[in-house]
Image 1 (tube, rainbow, N blue to C red):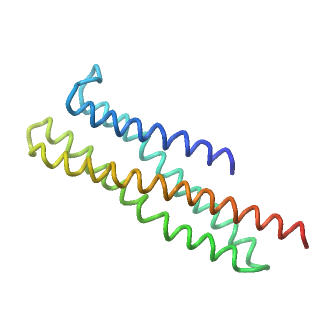
Image 2 (cartoon, rainbow, N blue to C red; image 1 turned 90 degrees about the horizontal axis):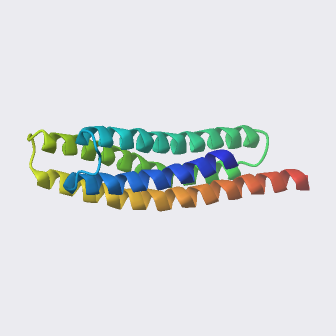
Image 3 (cartoon, rainbow, N blue to C red; image 1 turned 135 degrees about the vertical axis):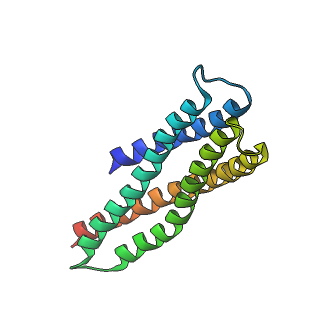
Length: 156
């Protein structure tokens, strides 16, 4: 559990840095090869990060559900409320990020106006911050649930 959480935090930081570099790279060509190859490289890290986070909470939810089948159901209800708050901004930032990368490439191919990139990039930054805060709260909440489950088990 701790390994995945620490890995997620490191990847969230790398994703944020990559997202900022995509914005910088849009104006100042900092990547030595083609512009779109940098976007694709950051996309791999970004999508892997969001996928790891979603699967972490899916796996945690399954483990808590298995635990609560024979015991108190309050732990499972807690993880469900965490998932309800976590998934919408996480999925929104993933979709917005993909749209931003596609629009960035389309702009450099001369197919769309630059304003589309500005709009999608600002929305992606906003939802990245929002989802990162929500992910942090979700990690804290799931850790507290697991700690409460183990204390409950020790107390019995």
